[in-house]
Structures are given as C-alpha cells and as structure tokens.
Image 1 (cartoon, rainbow, N blue to C red):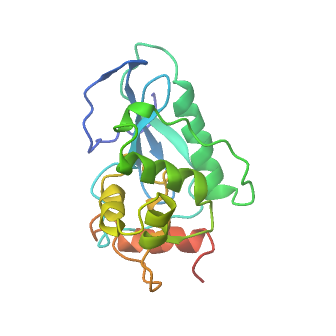
Image 2 (cartoon, rainbow, N blue to C red; image 1 turned 120 degrees about the vertical axis):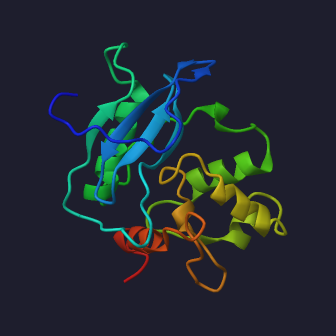
Length: 201
C-alpha cells in the first residue's frame, strides 16, 4: 500500500490453503502496537501482535488510530470480508467502548479440532465473556463442563490463535491475580487491556 510502512510479520506468512479458500495476511496499526491477522474468505485463522513486543518495550498510544498498514498478497485486489470485520472491530474496541453491538469478526472453524476441549474453551470464552468482564480459569473450566480442567484451560489460553477477539486477557486467577499473559512476556499489556475495559481502576 503506497505511503504505508511495511511491517515485518512475526508469524508465518506462507499462504495456506483452507477448504474455504487461500489465506491472506493483513497488518494493522493499533494503539498497543502492530497486529498481524491471517484469514481465509470464511473467517480469521490467527490474530496477534506483529513483532517482538514485551513488557520491556510495551508503550501504548491510546489516541493512535486503527488502520490497515499492509496486505501480504495483493493479487486478489480486495480485502476479505473477515479482514474488514476485524479492522472495524479493532477500531470499535479501542475507540468506541460504548458500542457493544459491533459484530465480531467471523472465525474460521478450521482454527482447531472441532469438538475438542480446547476448541470448546476458545468459543465459550468468545461467546460468554464480554467486554469489561473477567472469569477465572476454574470458572471457565466449569462453563466448559469440567471443573477440574483448570490446567487445560490455561493451555488453551496459551495456544489461542485469535487473540483479543477470543479474549484470553479476560481470564484471571481465582484469587483475583491477573496471571501471566503470553507466557509472562506481556503482563503489562494484559493489565492495560483490562484497564481499558474498565475492569481495573
């Protein structure tokens, strides 16, 4: 995209074939750093931070606009619908907190093994824990039908391919502690997100 900075994408940029069509990767500017999102025509496959953002260099800019920076493959000549949905959702998340009716981006069902406990955890979190709410690992395990599966919930959070939309930052410890985020490397980001959502003051 002319005049836009091209961003190095930390996740795999190889085009993958999904049953719904080829994937494409899009990079967005956001107030907490650049994000990379991969999707097929049906829905998101991945969403995460682009580049090495850690507690040491996390420097949020709350007033920064959310916009598209780059599109890996240009030959199709247009953005997939889920990419547009994701851009609009991010714009609303960061700059229009009162709009809770914004449509979440579609997520491709091929992000994991449908019917698995991990899959159930991801989509329970997506559908049951809204903006401004948190849930403990134990309570999320109970919602998913296995109160003893706290560790499996933690593993599902660690392997969440669609961060932010599937809001693993809203999962906290039973004692109220925030727990680790991104294997403990982005705890300041988790705290910032929860403050942004009004959970922390």
